[in-house]
Amino acid sequence: MIEMLVALVVLAVGMLGVASLFGISLHSGSSAITRMQAVNLATDLADRIRANRRAGGAYNGAPADNHCVGAAAVSCSPAQMAADDLYWWQRQLSRAIVGGTATGTVTEVDGTPATYTIRITWTEKSGQQLYQMQIQVPTS
Image 1 (cartoon, rainbow, N blue to C red):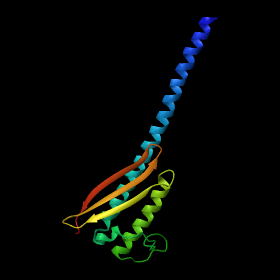
Image 2 (image 1 turned 90 degrees about the vertical axis):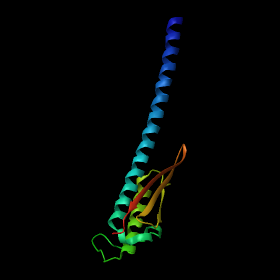
Image 3 (image 1 turned 60 degrees about the horizontal axis):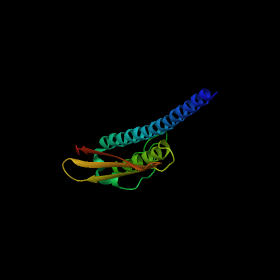
Image 4 (image 1 turned 45 degrees about the vertical axis):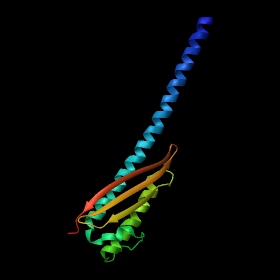
């Protein structure tokens, strides 16, 4: 009888360890998925910047829905397209990263070639997280 109780206690301790590892792996998986989303969104904006090279510092500005793309698209200047890109990127960012705590910023440093820094920050249980990407885009 005592042997059965000891075996039951050993089994219970082992099951608690397995449950703890399962919880840790779920949290790590969630964090990895969020980081992957941040990488994908930063790359998406980098591609948009490369496609709209003539916008220059307009990617530092405020986002605006200028209807540059879609069914009722209008002709937009490079600066308007940059504001439209930022608007749609911010919307994707708020939807893709769980909790709606994500923010994205773009800073541009003039030079030859121009250098853009894309930063995405979000909050997880472990604290504030940051992904940063830097790209260089020739003007022509």
